[in-house]
Image (cartoon, rainbow, N blue to C red):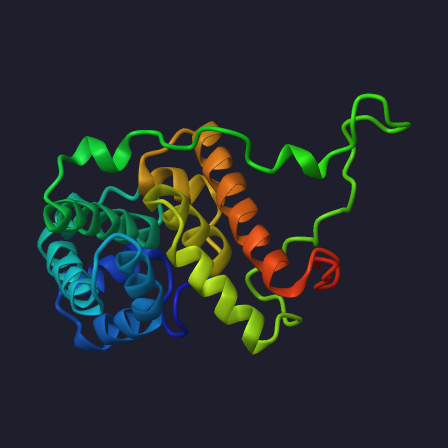
Length: 219
């Protein structure tokens, strides 16, 4: 998880340094969060260039709005919520659709193919025919380069809201409460989106490596 960079203390100290236009503090914060911010922005917009502009616009908004930071959430959560809102607005504009189209729930139908479960007349009705591979944590070291490529491609193809939740939770290690705040989701919706997104990624991996592939137990 992206904690505060070395040399930065509590949020209040960091905010005060940013408000004073401390270039060293700003540079360290930007460097530490750059990768995560770009990936989250990229999940909402159509090109790398757009994502980079979203990140730049976010930092401008942060510097201009520091006086509105009340400390109700962490500085990181506050910054990423500005980022997500900026990226969503730009993504909607790029697709020339109204915002509700990006927010409308599209997660319908079964999460997992019903054929993967045992029939009602089976000795263990409703159980898995073949157990799915365990879900790896963000710092899981077992996945090889090939598997990581498949995961990245699968996440990129998820619906917008699933992609955003999986990216924040499983790529960057944000907690569920933080993600709910950033994306303005209820805890229940966050869990559903995460579950469906993970199921889609897992299915993509199983198709790629075979249904009996194993990544090792999650730490």
